[in-house]
Image (cartoon, rainbow, N blue to C red; front, side, top):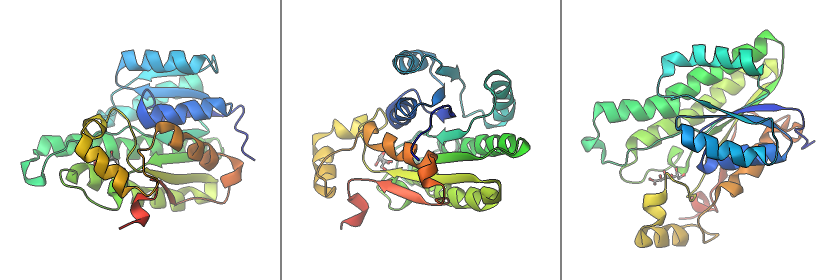
Length: 252
Ligand code: GCO
């Protein structure tokens, strides 16, 4: 039931952090993965790692901030790779500023990359499967900030809360096509995005005190759940979000 051999996955934000952790877990489960990343150097490094496990993996350079260019980008990808059984939306950015200090451009950039690009890419992906009467599984990576707020995370939190509702909307729109959509909400995970936080000893001590399991998470804590949600073992799960947060949200 957990076997994903022969499946093909597209992973946005797959060249580092949580996205790479998910991409690696999928490759280890037998999936051929294509990662989408803005930074070619990071793409190359990530792919050389993944190719050590499965030589058919690949990377494509694309900046998901260009939301209106996504349909043409995805169409060209389909021509090269064929349809994807699995889509992982993990690309995400943040701008840590108090809400009243955030510019409209900064707000729009976070919403474009985290939310709009996910909407456009996932609807294009679903269309490609519906056209071929093919089932599929999508995972959207959210955040603790879809549920609670920390100072300076207004744009990021709003995008993640919206994504949580998008998980439900996609699931109910596409259930009849056997296309499942679920969310993964990581807690505090050591990645490039959180480097300014875990290198701040005071903040890091707060996270570890606030997290019942008493540690920062790693991308390897997230990958296995993505494999499960994309496998037949999760064939009756859709429209839900699972928290991988060390107990953070369960505790006061
Ligand atoms: C922050 C962090 C968080 C984490 C993560 C928590 O600024 O507090 O960036 O948002 O990255 O999303 O789930």
